[in-house]
Amino acid sequence: MRPRRMDSRLPVLLNFFLFCSCSASPPNFVLLFADDLGFGDLGCYGHPSSITPNLNRLAAEGLRFTDFYCTSPVCSPSRASLLTGRYQTRSGVYPGVLYPGSRGGLPLNETTIAEVLKPLGYATAMIGKWHLGVGANGSYLPTKQGFDHYLGIPYSHDMGPCRNLTCFPPDIKCFGFCDVGSVLVPLMHNEDIKQQPVDFLDLESAYSDFAVDFITSSVKKKQPFFLYYPAHHTHYPQYAGPGAAGRSLRGPFGDALLELDNTIGNLLATLEEMGVINNTLVFFTADNGPELMRMSRGGNAGPLKCGKGTTYEGGMREPAIAYWPGTIKPGVTHELASTLDVLPTIASLAGAKLPPVMLDGVDMTELLVRRGKSKRETMIFYPTSPSEKYGLFALRMGKYKAHFYTHGAEHSATTPDRDCPATAVLTAHDPPLLFDLEADPSENYPLTLEGDPDLQAVLEQIQKAKLEFEASMVFGESQISKGTDPDLAPCCNPQCSPRPSCCRC
Image 1 (cartoon, rainbow, N blue to C red):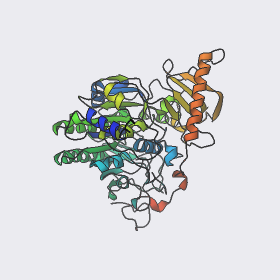
Image 2 (cartoon, rainbow, N blue to C red; image 1 turned 45 degrees about the vertical axis):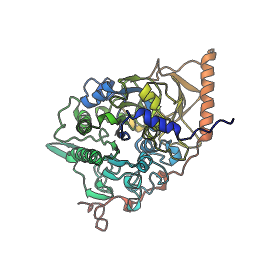
Image 3 (cartoon, one colour; image 1 turned 90 degrees about the vertical axis):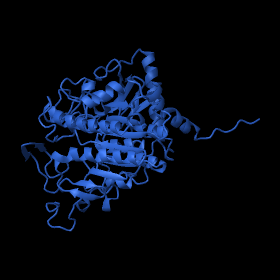
Image 4 (spheres, helix red, strand yellow; image 1 turned 180 degrees about the vertical axis):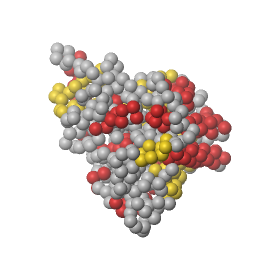
């Protein structure tokens, strides 16, 4: 008698019934994504003066990761990977980042988390920093990528005329270099510009109100929801409204972090008030490491080496917390995980169909719910400007990480470590630099391979994994290399003159 073929949907359906706490409705998802946040920036990760009571609560009552990675040490590619479960090299969001007038963006044939959930009837909303393109007639905005509602700035908030903007009352000034060729930073609601320039002092309260209304409305409609909140905090230049400005122990960076934490507290309170906290997965992490060139206003990588712009640990290992009362038990995990794994995990928990493309993420359900082993065996480290010529720069397997190339970055200047700033030029390593990240997370002491057959065997495994991965990698057309067009920069009065100074509303 021939065995019956297992229905391909069975694992997904089993996950749905096992991990939804027997609820009549599918789980909700709140995805929090901080900006330029270092491994050592949160109180729950050891910072002595950060005030983050709500994030500390998530960590104490949820699962805190110690070995969680983003896929790029800069913004746009990291965000593309989070939303698609694919390395940025596949989607073409490289090299570097997108700008207000960029011709490219996250390709519309890529499938986001929001688009995975929409066929199941989920309400989807986003607040905050998109940074995956605007395009002609808003063709790359979140509303074109599965989000029903959007309120936010479509790129980095420093990409306006005053790059060194500081917004701390009562002294609101613009210091430093001003690029008169840039449009004023816009606040967009769906596909329309609501305010230009944005009022940074009221921005976070607007985000909080928008998110609270979205959650409340979704629950009243008995509709499952997905809320994505990629915050502008704590990217330089920092800002904070009157509820947080001057109230932290850590200056402008601490104030911005406190304001972000306050918004997270409002979201948690709303989930509790609406009675859905026990049916909601809240996941927090960040896009890349701290911008050390800003010194005390750039963030902190804790014990990790270097920061933003580099493929050292400080550039790509991030704080991460998974919180789901009654489903995820409190604790700490040292298992390997990544932003790539968020889409497959949410799809599994919701009972959604995965996109029919090559995914780089793995399902974390077993790790989150049963504290099992991670399905992730390796982590790939691409530089800010990946290419087929050089391939990946580093690879982690288990506790070992091999650097095939190293390169410093301007973002990581000012530190005493000579490997971090841009003056540390591109260097090939043959044999690669090999580190034991459990014994040496700071990557200070390369292991000596000579005379150690066990380490040589480890390196052979890593090199084999490198070859296999690179053989599977098909580089997508670079969206960022398409260049920029000043006329594509968002302007609330598109026919006005002279641009961009007339773009005000």
